Image (cartoon, rainbow, N blue to C red; front, side):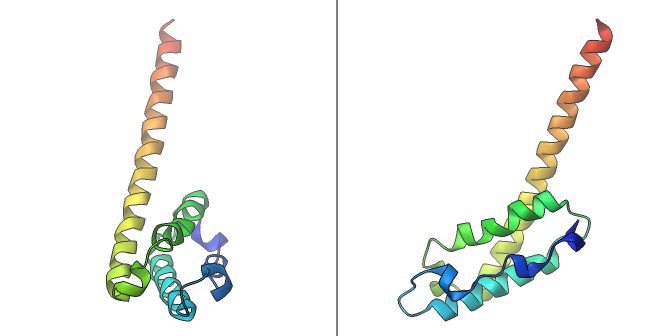
Length: 112
């Protein structure tokens, strides 16, 4: 559940973003703004495990490229929101598939 976590756990500081040729403060501000936007959009009932998977992925996806410097913050935020929704859907689909497979195995056991 989202209320068991805090956005502060996922915010970055300048030392964590690494070397950006003097643009570390800008990069830190942008990624933290994106993190806040995604956090605000997360469903309140989303599992803690899913949040713990999604939030670090934002930096993993955006922090390896000059996109943070080259692309408008609003565009990056839009991308991050879509990415977050896709990750949630993929996680739900994976869980549903696993539950369906478990049900099939249990049904097979009952038939024997």
